[in-house]
Length: 291
Image (tube, rainbow, N blue to C red; front, top):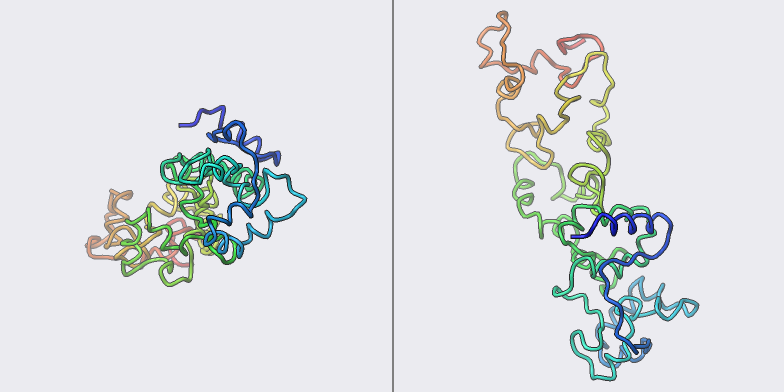
């Protein structure tokens, strides 16, 4: 696990625009940069695919230093690797295999991409602490538009979050499987300081689409203020209408409102929100009745 000092240095480097180096071993002594032509000799198929990517276009700029140009910008100096006939890990070449730590694999990417504001929180994010590396989601040699994902969401996300595949298959769900929404509409996959990696704090992520229940209201529903939307709703999917976490609305309400008013007749068989229509908050009635 990284120390707080490493995280602090990485965060400050990202904000300042300087390269970030985390858990990355130095190249072997005497290794020099051989150039893409040498790499292509053995890795023709990978080089052909790589040549069609945005990385190839950017890293081929001759004005860039050798250490930030072509294949060796990510894989490191390859002279010893080539002289010894190649092979996995030979000559200290970086292969981005599973035997390398996640932080080491990500470090090569962060050398350039940590300057992007969307990645400032990556090292402190749940994916990073969960030993997920950039290359677990991004296929760098895959031709196509940036960000060269190995698979499109939500399929990519299901690779780790298999439980959510089942949740999104429930009768009531946000339209992620249908392609109307994406996981990343709500979650910042590159790290967030918010709960569950949400793009915004508290319930503001929900209010991006559901602005009509945002408020502020003259009479606020206490559950929404203190516990938020997920106190009553499951954001991924539910067998209940409106993504409620309980089938019976009354049952859900009773979890907080344990004392039933004497004026209510057979409350167990009633739908609370049939009368308390403005349940998210009201500007006219303290009991959330319709105006």
